Length: 346
Image 1 (tube, rainbow, N blue to C red):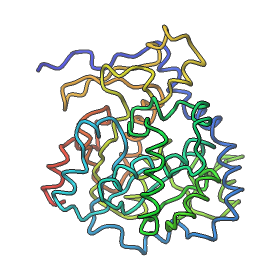
Image 2 (tube, rainbow, N blue to C red):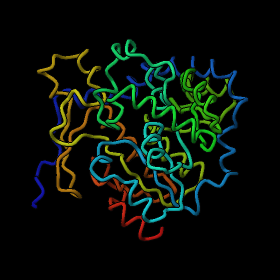
Image 3 (tube, rainbow, N blue to C red):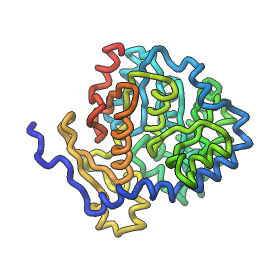
Image 4 (cartoon, rainbow, N blue to C red):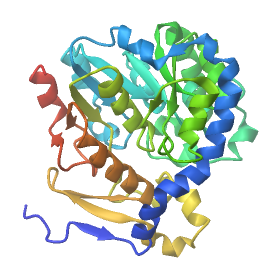
């Protein structure tokens, strides 16, 4: 198939929003992160610093797989080749992928969580207090395009509770101090081993730096998480665990053509800015020459992509995108099938 000449088609609002995304994100979560870190001071002694992970054996050798929860997982089911090939390296997952692994009988070597959202994040860990009434207040899980089993909300929530009852004491979690209190309490209930870290929010050398304030609160190390938990997991793999060959799966940072806008991550935020008929202005369509197919993305995911490609330049590791879809490709990333990564024995 001949590649199109114009491989990026950008909506009218995209560039302006992407250029401001760092500021928008800091305004949205900065104070919330600081407040959560203050509240979590009473819990940090019930865990260790993330620096202690360097003394732990997290998977064999120098290879790791970061398994995020993008829509490509439904298409390629990456857990199957990982199991069949007997991969012995580290499997590191955002909290949103925890159920996917555990329900397939695979115990991740490390879970990562960073989002400070006050109500949504606990659902990935199973919310013992979930009710039908609370579901009516937020339709995030029933419409999102990650692990769609979460759309069947009550039954999946109960399944996660049972999975963590079974496996919790075998799990390690890299817990950002930004995590909301209910997530921290839930993790403690499950018996996971906690390793604490601060998310890097800004330049710590700047006056009034929130990153520096986090350090003053708890003396914990900071990790540049690139604005999202998937990038944070990748950063921890190479910067903390010293993994040299890191594969990414489920790291789409985009949606397949035909996905309804309502299924996108930031749909509700967009509707606060424009009418439904103007939603096209928020999205960018990008042609992936490796898969010879189009994907579309929103300003937040596009910013995550730009940040990842920038920090990958300095990373002391080789990154392999084995998502087999999405928009995360470019310099310093090898775009290969997951089976190729597994069979080469890297």
